[in-house]
Image 1 (cartoon, helix red, strand yellow):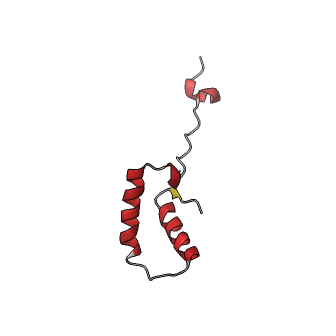
Image 2 (spheres, rainbow, N blue to C red):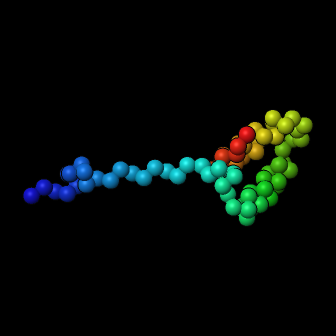
Image 3 (spheres, one colour):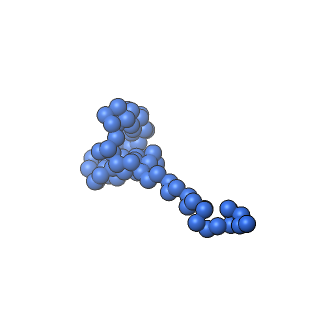
Length: 71
């Protein structure tokens, strides 16, 4: 009799790690929580007038929280 764990068809592949969520797919409450948290983080950064820099900052910050920000 064969051992079950030696049968390759009996071995399940690992589940892929959940990828980042898209900002647009987050519910309104989660978006609000992140906006508030980002506001506190933003208070610690130097001011910037560059829209590109602002978008890059928020995208990086959200990526650290497994959220994709569409640019």
